[in-house]
Length: 278
Image (cartoon, rainbow, N blue to C red; front, side, top):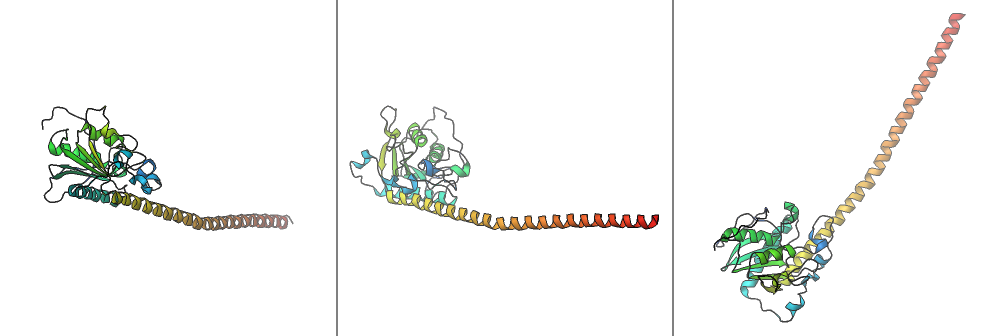
């Protein structure tokens, strides 16, 4: 495909691993789908509510109308996206993964690295789009299908439409940031010059479970950390009191000794003077 336009490339850093037989892609970066507002941050203290609850599993009304039939390929590539999500867990990120498939092969992979790379752009879908464009040699990704474990946010949904991706397969929905039909339907807005086909709920239980598992562990680690801080605070208080007491005693002793010395010297001097005068 001829590249007739130049788009500003989003700078993201990440790493990916391709299976033998799949086309390699360079550089990788981030998490595409976002965890519902409070939870996505995955900061040690941020406790998500919507994401972990993974009520995010409920498909948008439009998708529930007809029970979709998932093909073997859809299941296969969503499993690949889930493997990317597992990579995010290993570096302490919210587990969201994505892959882009072109002509029956995975040409790009990505997983959430937002906290690691310290950039809002480090979403799985954005990473995939960047790498797929480089692989194909064009900003247009016509004929491609993007698989993501969590419904894309507004940024990623917009990038999907801008890159002309034909089809999007979503694992589980995002009640706080989903723009593939939950909050907004950027992917199929008829006012845009491109709309994507969307399939919801492929491996929904697995995509939901990995988020629940991550946030459950995050809560446990936060609880343990706070408990340890309280214990350390409790241990340091008596120690501080003991040090303070020792300091006061030392100062009191020094003062008493100084006063005693001064008094003895004064008395001795008076006595000597009296005897000398006599």
